[in-house]
Amino acid sequence: MNNIEKRQFHIGKHQFNNPLMLAPMEGVSDLPFRIMCKRLGADLVFTEFIASDALIRDSMKSKQKMDIVDEERPVAVQIFGQHKEAMVHSAKMIEDSGAEIVDINYGCWVKKVVNNNSGAAYLKDPERMADMTNAVANAVSIPVTIKTRIGWDHSSIVIEKVAKMQEEAGAKQISLHCRTRDMGMTGKADWSWIDVVKPHISIPLILNGDIKTPQDVLSAFQTTKADGMMIGRAAVGYPFLFRRAKVLLETGTDPGEPTVEEMFDACIQHLDLNIKYKGESRGFIEFRKHYSGYLRGLFGASSIRQKLVLAQSYDEVRQILDEYIEYLDKEDRLIPFEHKDAPKVTCRNI
Image (cartoon, rainbow, N blue to C red; front, side, top):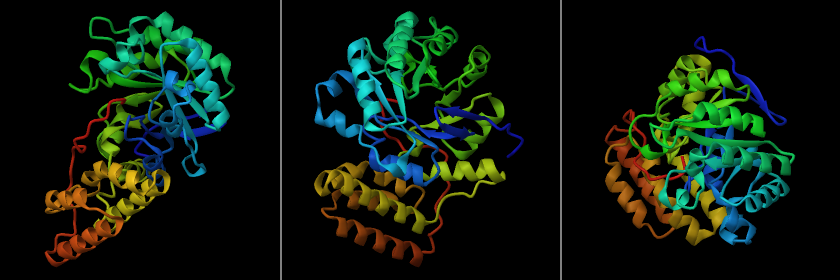
């Protein structure tokens, strides 16, 4: 495995070996997308983040985010909130739902969340963060994990202190987005913080931030002591990233872009899942954000994407894709271009 040390660990009853994880992403990591990532190599998938206050009010939208099927297991359900009672109650609901892991969001950077003293706002008060984790961990029997950032801003980087306190509070894993809160999704994630934090804890430490290509996964394993990698935006519309990275880690060779047939087959699988679990109208409309990823690297993809977004039925989507593949074959352009950058998408909670 490219001289990469074996990083094997357990979370509860589940064993992981150099794992690749799907990051929790609001509006993206729903049930159909999690299934696709699982089919293509993700070891652990996280739900969209769920507001604990809404969940305990029996919000249908929040409860639907907690829907889980056997094919995606093991799965972690992520919650956020400022009220201890709501977070504890939500964690118990998650346990009762059959989820394997409760994950707490201490990293969301958007104003709406931090202005309510949730998400990355906890980084301004590590003691409050530890108290919340401890309360949730003591309320359930399944593992509790957390996702956070290195600090509120560069003048207040507290991740070493936070990591130690989180382990003592009962967290069983830390996923570290290697940016500060004030960076949002700008700038470059500083992976060096992984090796700064790692000696201070005994629980698994997962690297998140700027994992865009299979080569990034390999490099991160080679240059840091992270126990696993968490992939976010780069997987949107492109769950093949998990498979490519897995093959690269195991064989030392990147298998390259999937064939056009594989991309279109996955696109239809994903659309089928969206319709199955969301209903035809909603599932069809919400799938539109994924077309860019499934067409990545293909000649003339922009115009085809516009047609797909305007399509009014499942059969029309299939017809557009069938005609497109015939066109690519005729023009001898069935081989996708290699793309290094992730699709441009907006995913808040990563």
